[in-house]
Length: 252
Image (cartoon, rainbow, N blue to C red; front, side):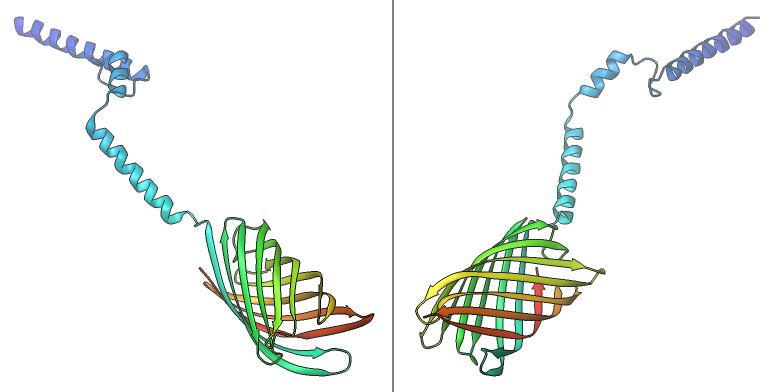
């Protein structure tokens, strides 16, 4: 009889504890032991310990490393070389020439600087150009973008007969038609400047072409036309240069 009473009491106690546990779970406590009150759970959540601090620090370091590896650099650089083949026409004579020029661009986000140099040994002049660039549309130099420029070109002959220091404004449009292929256009207007040899001189250069990318290397072919108009002693002189340009550019 005593054993039966003991068994009934034990089953009643187990059922009591089960009902408390079920009530605690249904109240949204997240399955915490019924002996822990909400106050103790809140204190536990706010409790500082060295282990959790080290774990959080390690997670932050991993996240920072991932961001540094996957966030694009704000700096861009481009190194290029051009080979020009063109005809000149001054109204009386025409001739064929070939020249080479190099360029280097450096960008930080939307602004950049470009330097260009051409040593034209066949026409016996040198061009040194520097310009400031502002990208109005687009995210990268090797991507679809619209950029405006302002700069200075110094053209001087090899014997020092003339020196043209011409400021210019320019615009560049680059558009990708496919993932690795696109079109390119550039226009420069050189503001009038007065010089002893040519007199009052102004001009423009327009070029357009297509390009294809091989990773960071670009190969581009383009057509260009340069017009230079000079006025001295009421006599106007026009020099036109028209031809093709083959360009290799490296982006990094």
